[in-house]
Every structure is written in structure tokens, then in C-alpha cells.
Length: 72
Image 1 (tube, one colour):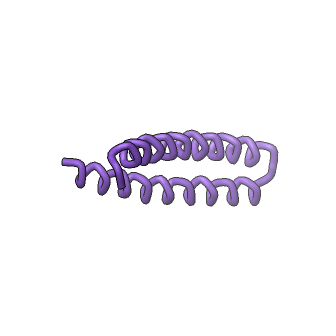
Image 2: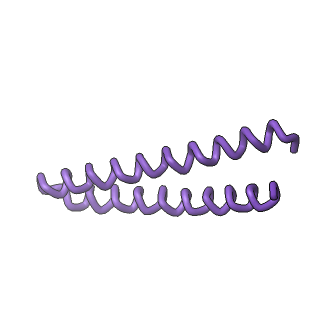
């Protein structure tokens, strides 16, 4: 992988991690709202989605750390 591609990948990983964090937070906020108007099952599934995004972000963070380690 060339340096330009490596830099682009680092940028994309950072972007995806932040983007996922924002979505996870938004899912949790809407899950609270759904619970508030009696949609407990909907809220439960939305929290599962938030957790799945958090797990994906953890994997992306590990990928970023691996990429950065090789750049040293």
C-alpha cells in the first residue's frame, strides 16, 4: 500500500469511528424516547444496534492502531 493510500485509510478509519460514535449516541437517545412513549421492544432493539455499532468501532479502532504501529 502506498503512502497516499495509507494516509487515506487512516483518515477514513478516523472518520468511520467518529461517525459510528455519533450514530450510536443518536440511537441511544431515540431508544430513550421510544421507551418514554411505551415502545420498550423498539428501544431494546435500538440499544442492540447501538451496541453493534460500538463493537464495530472497537474493531475499527484496533485496525487504526495496527496501521499507526506500522507507520512508526
